Amino acid sequence: MMILILFTAAAMLLTGCGQGEAKPGNSQSEKLQVGLVLDPVGLGDGGFNDAANNGLAKAGKDFGSAVETTAVVLKDLPSGEKELRRLAENKTDLVIAMGYYFTEMLPKVAGEYPETKFVLIDNNLPNLKSGGNLTCVTFKDHEGAFLAGAAAALKSRTGKIGFVGGAEIPAVKNFETGYAAGARYINPKIEVFSNYVASGTEGFNDPEKGRVLAMDQIKSGADVIFQAAGASGLGVLEAATAQKILVIGADTDQSYAVPEPQRGYVLTSILKGVDTAVYDVIKLRLDNKLAGGYVVLGIKDSVETYAENDINRDLLAGIKPRLDEIKEKIVGGEIKVPVYE
Image 1 (tube, helix red, strand yellow):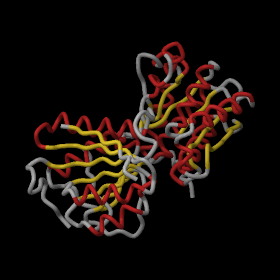
Image 2 (image 1 turned 45 degrees about the horizontal axis):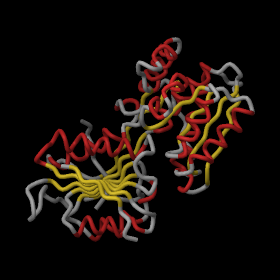
Image 3 (image 1 turned 30 degrees about the vertical axis):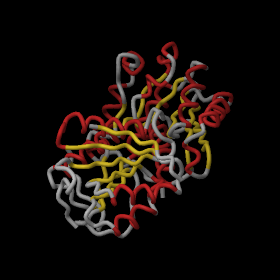
């Protein structure tokens, strides 16, 4: 059973990031109670949050009567700590918080409720010991972005490509770093335009600004654009495909995020495996195997890859062998993808 709350009141081996052991279920129910807390961008972003919710829904369907899932969309950032605490007070067995928004508040709340398991997905918390009630799951976004950069360079005719990030934070800068490196692996002389919607997390929820930035890059000659901008990226997708410019999506397969006549201009999307991560931590908690510590997932773990479907298969055909070769070289260590520092 899955419940969606709009909060308006004010199989991998995952071993995680620090702070007790709790048994699944509680005094009110034998079901494992799972709460997924989404950032204020909410559902309908066509990417990160939608992917997380898909993983939650799949777990609810596959595990049936063993779990009860609740998805919570925050009204704003200040409401986050209160909502995390509310879930813990209600004896939620597993609380999954999605992304950068929860970095400061989650360790505090987790320390107050040692019987609840907490998971932070897509950001790390420093100096935490393994074996506790807090697990951090992050992704090697630079590896997936390297593939995006290689694909963009292989398809570009102008020798100019673009990147639009949501917030100018390390997690997104990692996308930019990998993207530029992948492009220059193919063409050392390629020009890469980079722009950010905002310096802070508000940049993930401004599709109009994303559209404007994409148009600026197109006017400067970019003929392929990669977006890592959350809901703002929907504006990038719209602008690029409307201008018949190739675009690369992020987190989920975004071929279907644009009107049908424009879908042929979505070159591919870099799949992050957010849905898989959410699903797997629920399964591990259900099996009493969610430990605590740091988990980093990448191409080797089959969670960072490029999307291929009936829409883009012909578009990718000429470059797919090269992309697969690059994937193998990354896994084998022959290609060392740089990380933002």
